[in-house]
Image 1 (cartoon, helix red, strand yellow):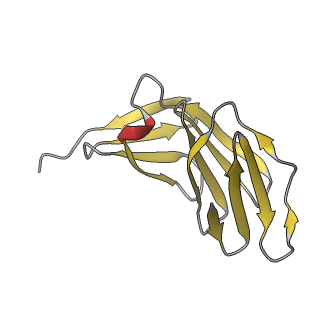
Image 2: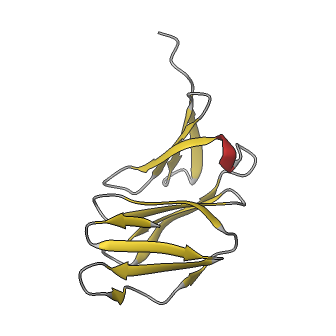
Image 3: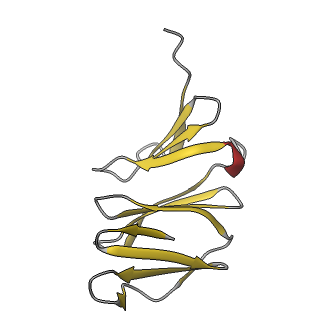
Length: 121
């Protein structure tokens, strides 16, 4: 369950349900995901971040009702290695903080993850 001012998001199995909090109505029909969600969060800017068991990661712009980023952490890390997920406010590009202290940033223009090593300063 993820709640942020204007949106309520919840998962039932592989289905993702997105509702307008103030209208008590669904934003779009349920989205069927390929894998069960493990992590759901909605940012104050209306960006929905979803990390699934298969390490797939999606970012939706709820105001526009569209998917901004669809990628995977498979081969880089597992969902259990993730400490936090955020999104760049302007682009929706996900930033994933790992339990090791390192971070990964998905760059849309490269369609790839960029590794940010742990600072040794």
